[in-house]
Image 1 (cartoon, rainbow, N blue to C red):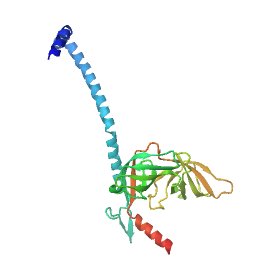
Image 2: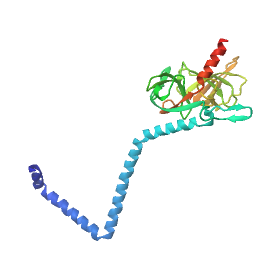
Image 3: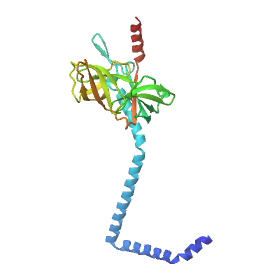
Length: 276
């Protein structure tokens, strides 16, 4: 209290001046319509600017939550697409059972670690076994294919990236359906090579390269990239096609993990056939 009194005594002229100024300003605003309207207009602009900046900052902080909600919604909607269901024809009746015949289920996940400058690149996701993630599941983003799930714990999973020299994906030219193997040579993180396409195939720069659907991991038609360059060595029977990846692995935040509900049935049948 003593310090407060000392402060008042020391600065009483300044405090008195501020009080008189405030009273004078109040009198001017109360008895002069023009000054009052000018003051209110200025204060509204100032307040509006402050609220605008506040809302902008709040929306920015909410982007993470908004993106996660959108990722979950995209995964759900993709699971409801006709391509995610297997349609069976019995005589002339088309059956599309949305309960028991769903072939692909999509689960959203967030990327929490990612590498692009190694020969064996991996992506780490914030979802694991407790979220229904299993090894050998395909992983895609809204731009195209990302890779294949390798290892899974209760809460996390690691994905072999397409830009991993150990990974090969069955791919095809969308325009002609000629299929081959998509491989990374360990150089540019933006490019891979499509091999085993025969020389009599019609290949053009800009053609889309998509998943062939011949594996139990990716559905048919998942975008992988576009043809950037076509090479054919003298006497060779197959093209060496340079493909620009559709996914930018340096800008990867949210993905979707593909669950194939009949995958085990397909694999077991193929194993039985190989052993016959």
